[in-house]
Image (cartoon, rainbow, N blue to C red; front, side, top):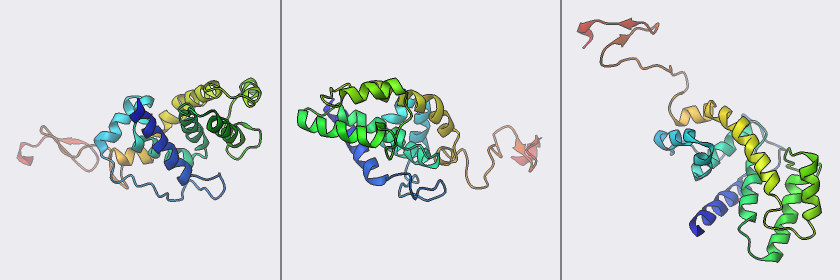
Length: 197
């Protein structure tokens, strides 16, 4: 349990140092994140489930990179901030962190306001005087659900993910040129010449 908490804190600190506000963010801008040292096999495991992606530091980092291209990185940042928040034992630190999360992600017109409904936002606002460990839980689940149902499927079809899994590369084709039983010509048609072997 403690190891998972440490990993979540590590992921959160990584994102909070790498990400800023939406200003000066371009979907075409190169990020510091390097995906070249992620194995295709490891990346393919992320497609097993959204939870599998979130449990992998490289997966979270790559997913956040994808979200930056869609100008929605505040979702993963908010989710990670809530995960860290739930691990804070000190009431003083929890109050400080709750105010930070509220000011950055919940408050109307905040720099990285997440898309949650009015009632959820008002419930959080009421809890800000004496925030509990679970005061952001409803909002976190709504953001999680949004990422899982909306962003995650698009991520699995994105250039970022497909390049890592080597299912797509610059100018590459998506089919195998040769197998044990046949050879493809340039048009992708099967040639079954025994002399090809």
